[in-house]
Image (cartoon, helix red, strand yellow):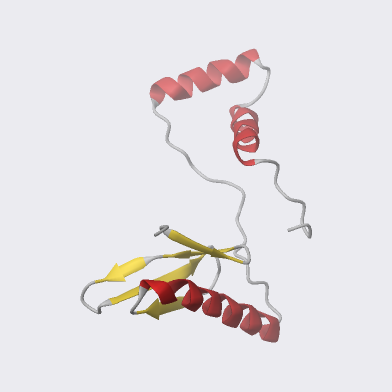
Length: 118
């Protein structure tokens, strides 16, 4: 079993509750709390997909965007040695640390999609 579920560009978690004898999860990276639950692994994907469909329908009714907006900033801890190496690399490239990290992320993940293309 995968440790996340995917459907229509949504990602959902997978949790096990021994006490309740069930599998459950929630939609990740959205503004609202949307959960799903089942007693069998075979039904988990179906419950997740149903939760996504219900969420999309509710958002449409309310005229709201279903995605969680991200600020575009985050903190990362890399340790002093890697930080120093990064700073030196940026200096030799005549770039900022931010520019170097952003380029590394683009190389790893691909270019970000323009608004309206996803």
